[in-house]
Image (cartoon, rainbow over all chains, first blue to last red; front, side, top):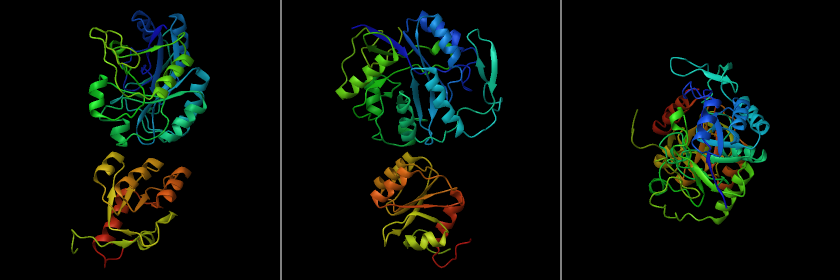
Length: 261
Length: 126
């Protein structure tokens, strides 16, 4: 079965902490040149650069995934991923409705830019997108699943903004996977992720970050549905025994974080 | 103030009344509150909250109940009138943990609880 490479955690110039040069256009071009098959755009609490992301990915013939890196009520960062833009924007409305409206202080943050596929600035979001939303992690998961999406607690092995830094334990909610940033064996030393499958992504904030970690999955073809299926299979297998990575691998086997050499 | 290191355990009903708390789920009859722990970081509470404490927080969701259960907390005091979801109420009922709410923020409510537990003869300022 063919294998596909996905980077499912990527910020654009809409995130107040991301480099201003990281537009959907530059991301899609670089993703294609690096051999990614699928690219998710996951700005903080927002999917508003989704339309440009859709156009740019189509131009580069890679599969777009729409979503956001949600800050839950507990201040846990979670990837909320959707197949289509409408589902993502519907979820965004829910998130926006409970978001505190702090102004963006440009002494501390980059402006949050809405752009089109030609990198033209359309508008800015004037309230800070990073604070906690009103959705607790269980509610957020349920809302994402109701919209056919994938819900993945982000960078769970990091000491901040993560499931373990905020809660201190792994809740029993039916997460589709967890995201790790360290190689699997190092990550496992630090945190207990139960039997959940894991994904690895770049958490790109500057263009050079893109695809420095990515997820590889086996599927009939490259689509959101097939990614979901691959995760469900890995989850059902429930095997937390880590396979040994090949010694000179560039791309990992399914579920391994991979670094470009 | 007297006896700073040895708080008096106080019945949960008395604490709720003296601190003007809204009772959402009453703690089982006879439940004592012997200390307080204030934090909005659940991993901190899990590591440091003491058995029998009241856990003061703005984290109003069911994972707070999980932490209260793990630490043996007697009750959760939700501060700043935060909205309490139905699944949190149900978890508290299931686990036998009192759930109370205050209009005060964490600092003020902690101060009032401290005064009640550590200086039992003092009246709690309203």
